[in-house]
Length: 248
Image (cartoon, rainbow, N blue to C red):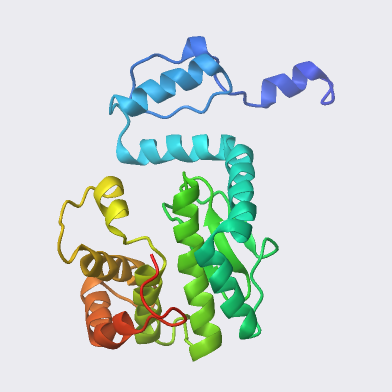
């Protein structure tokens, strides 16, 4: 009988990741591997559209997990710098502090997110930044500013961002997209490839607010999201507090 503690016994029962030589260049399946050559082969499958959508998601999630430490380290560096140097973030921090809130590096956390997202806000947890999707310091500035507007709204207006009031959530999403800078013309033109020169800001705010509502437990479909945004649009788009006007 084999010794269960021997290395031979362990190697026969413990699965190992395949070597690069066993992975062909062509194929429609994602295979996790620890070798550089194997990863290049998986990258080749991804960029040449050999992987179907489900397998492609597995590839990117495996890649994000492997790069998690590096992504989060860069995210934290950008966060710490923006808390000191970004005019919009410094100002929002002052306004939140005046209402008794506290936002800083202790509750702006960088994480690796499994689903495509830039970030999120929770009144108990704080601000989450998805380090694997926020790929520039400018995008992080917009994301933190967006989530800070949510924090301000909860403190200033007692906004309900939970599952009990879709109109409250719609209003805060409108304000956050309107005031954070994420809908400025350069972002839309160079980042999202929207080429319009008129009304792009309003259309961007409306689009992003609807997208943020879709998928919430209390929002059954995009029709309900559009309805909620439309019902509060005029008053919430015009409300630029704590700024005198749209800052960015």
